[in-house]
Image (cartoon, rainbow, N blue to C red; front, side, top):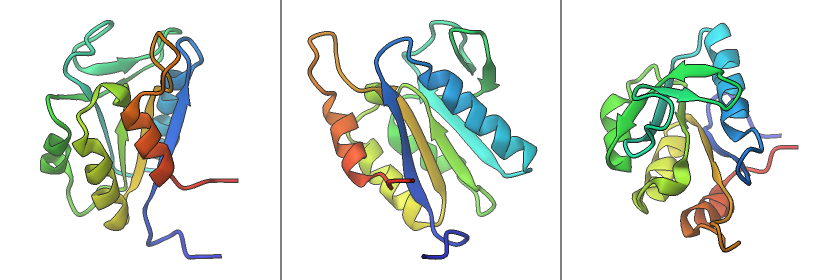
Length: 139
């Protein structure tokens, strides 16, 4: 088994609306914070349903986040001590999120992404399909 201590990876939390994606994302963030791991949380600027500067689940769990206009903005926040980068509502991000996620994982950063799998027509979001192809399968 490879040494996961020094290698990053991409995790995807996906499913339909009201499936608990944001709640699971927040749960993972809280575990990382408890472990004293430097974690950065982001969401697209257009997602202002519940809060401007927090990811909020339907059950009102919340965690602080940065609003970003484009995925490359994430790189401005990442420092040498960043352990994890977390993005909610990733289906609304631009195509660059795929490359940004790979760059971060290759730097040894854990990347956790949450978003809808399909649109209202049942068609997959292209970004999610690309990210799923890059994600590490955890068993």
